[in-house]
Length: 124
Image 1 (tube, rainbow, N blue to C red):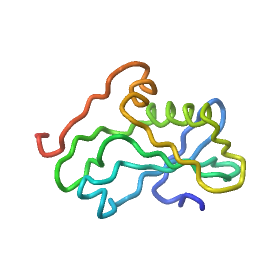
Image 2: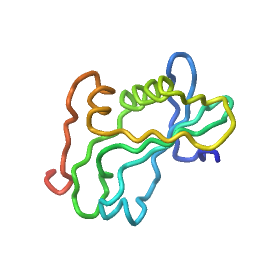
Image 3: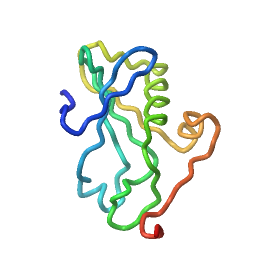
Image 4: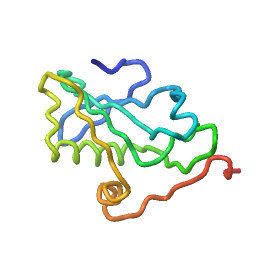
């Protein structure tokens, strides 16, 4: 399984270039807030095993206005580092490596800072 180049972004972590992408439209479950925000990461130079990340909050475009947070490159960089520490080898062939983060994992990844959530319908 490879990540499409269209709509993906490149990011460099420790000198290695990765490609990451958030699905353009939510699935039905994600739209209802039943499923978490997910994104995929792979090595851009030599794609192998894909990293699938599930975050402990909903997508910003969820229909019911669940709590959410922006996924910024700094967060993606920290999550890639965490996945590498937990055994993800992006050069290895095989099934996707799944990383399900919970609240405590997210706080650890963000350097001890608690996440700042927002609710989309409350924005002006």
